[in-house]
Length: 254
Image (tube, rainbow, N blue to C red):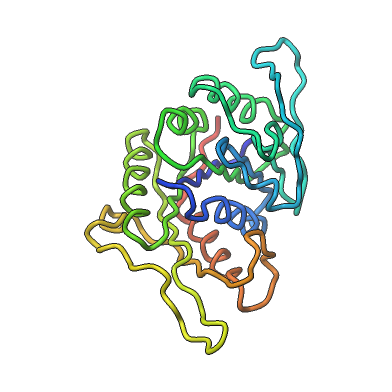
């Protein structure tokens, strides 16, 4: 069982979408069994973030088979994890068209022996191309989060992601502003790293609620533990998980 599917998307790369997806999944563990599905074919970073290496390239992949064999997720940190990075080598580009990528995604969605889950967090590729739209349709998402950084270009691209989800009738639960600020390692003063986007050109002007502001931590791993020191962002992710759960529509029996 997939559980309730929460997609994490972004209009552009480099905004920390995979970091948000992983730490949201970690935070949701206190509310039940959680799976994490990494469908970011162009940069599947989840395996590296949880300490899984896969260097071997895949040169042949069966898209249609009569076999009843189902893939098993990797269990790590009490998360059931499946990633396109388990197929591709760490430096292997995805050299297929959108339709073929969609077929591979269907296998990773439906061809997995998922345990009983309450939530499945899905790390989507950044952008709004045919690949993303195929994936969103196939996933039957209960809701979606959109990740941005404060600057204008991130918001302009994220606005497209918001419009994509809405056009596909996926509830936009809210937005996450990542790398919102940081603390000076010498004096502790709060520093803004980016010039913020004008309010009227941001995703917040589209009625998207800001569910979390995640600071940038100097020297912090993108996969840092949620049980770390009080200076990490664990409390922000715990609050984000609570807000996501509260905004999900009631579960519908299939």
